[in-house]
Every structure is written in C-alpha cells, then in structure tokens.
Length: 348
Ligand code: HPA
Ligand SMILES: [Zn+2]
Image (spheres, rainbow, N blue to C red):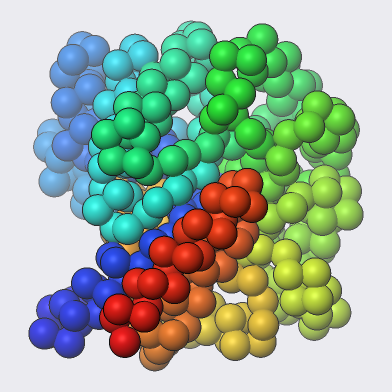
C-alpha cells in the first residue's frame, strides 16, 4: 500500500491514540517466523519448506479455510515458554500500536486436545501479561474461549478443568468467549454453558454475525447474555436488531482486515464499519488474528481510514469506544479517556 507522507502522518496519529484491543486471539498472533522457531525448538516437522511458503498459504476463501491453518499453526505450542513467547511478542507489538489494554482470547481446547495441560496454557500467557504490565504498563485480561464446533460437553469439561486455576489468575481471567466455525453452531448450543459462566460471575462475549446470520447475534444477546458481540457486522441485515444494538450501545468488536481476508467483504471500501459508526453503533476496531490477516490493530485503523475516508475525529471516537467497551473498572476507563482527550488536545 502507499506510504505517502500523509499516510505516514496518519499512521503516527493512529499509533498515538490510546486504545484498547478487545478482539484478539492469541493463537492468531503466531507469526510464521515464530511458528518455525517453536517447531525447531520442539522437534516438530512442518509441512512447509519455509516461512515464506507458509505465509503464501494464507490465501483464505472463508472462515473454515483459515481455521484449518490456524489450528495447525497452534500445534507448535508445547511448553509454558512457548505460550509466553507468543504472548510477549503480541504485547510488544500492541504496545507499539498504542494499545494500553488488551482483552485476549485463547482457546484451551486447541491445546488440551493435543495433550498440552491447561495449566501450561494459562501459566505462559499469564506470565507474559504480568511481565509486560511491569515493563511497559500495558494491561490485559483473558477471555477463555470455547470452540463452538466442539460439543457442549467438551465446553463444560474445559470450564471444569479451568476453574481450579481461577484464584491464581483472578486479576487476569475475567471472561468467556465463543469462537471457531460459526455456521451450523448457533449460540443456543452453548446456552447452558454460558448460564453457568454467568452464575460464576464471568464477563461474557461471543462471536456472532461474522459468517452467521443476524439471528445468531440476537441469540447471542438473548440466549447467551453476551455483553459484547465479536464481529457482528452481519447484524446490519436486520434493521430491528441494528436499532436495538444502537439503543443498547452493545459493543461490536469489528475486525476489518479479518473480514477482508476471510471474504466477509470483497473489498475494504465496501465494509460497513463507517456506516455502523455513523449510525451511532458502539463499534471498535481490532485485529482478530493479525499474523494471518496482514496487520495488527494500527494497520486495521489505518487501512479502514484510507478505504472508508474515516476522519481523525472518527478514528478517535473508535479508540474512545474501545475504552468504553472494555471490561476495565470505571476509574481505569476514566484515566484512559483522559489520556485520549489530552492527546487530541495536543494533536489539534
Ligand atoms: O474470526 C474468527 N472467527 C471465529 N473463530 C475464530 N478463531 C480465531 N479467529 C476467529
Ligand atoms: Zn475472532
């Protein structure tokens, strides 16, 4: 893409915006270089001759074609140090992009199914979060996500296995998510799991309306009691639902480059992000699986701004929404909103 002086200037403005990233799968931050390094460290043979060849395989046609490679890539994660290294690399990049706070999804079932202990997964990710907090001040929460292509029982078993770890990670593990193949795996499949998580006091998010129909968004709200909708872009096809999302200011964690790479939209200029924002929806911009979709959160802001003609005020509104829509305590949100306001005052 063009890197004119104006684009560089915009990119700098975006990097300086204090923001939260709310839709990020940590396994989706595994860059080909790290996949190869971890494969070597763990004595795992990869079916690609080079990092470049792996990157070239990232030509997706839909969500499932991505998920197949994403789960295969995660197969190099074996030790606590592997989970640490992956998470530390993400947090460093996020910090450079002006992310002050990240709410990170992780998929324990992807790892436990391969014989990796759930304790190992939690420990490596959590250690990186705590170190990054000390080193750079970036904060993070964890959203443990259930794979929706697996059974309700598998989700219950995962919850059961994770709960003994809750006290140890109570500063980090705040919520529950739902990801993987959406079509054919409607929210209702996990209504009882979410009910249990709600009773346990977890914050609730769910992917809906990425490839699935608007009814999945409605059911994520009504049956799962999701407080935020991950993606949600297809909600626009149902005007009544859209009015409800606006009235209730339900956050949508939109991921423009993901939608482009997974062919939810044909080109970024046709993405509904700007329309949703301008109609008053609580939209945020996020990277989803940045190693696979061609950009971290700053790149998602930048390419969206260029394709959709988002003004600097609109970009700042999106950053403000990300703070509002986070699960941070109100005092922390106020602090970040204050930082955003002073940044804008100085940038003006
Ligand atoms: O965009 C996504 N959608 C569903 N599941 C996922 N798991 C990682 N990324 C995604
Ligand atoms: Zn996602």
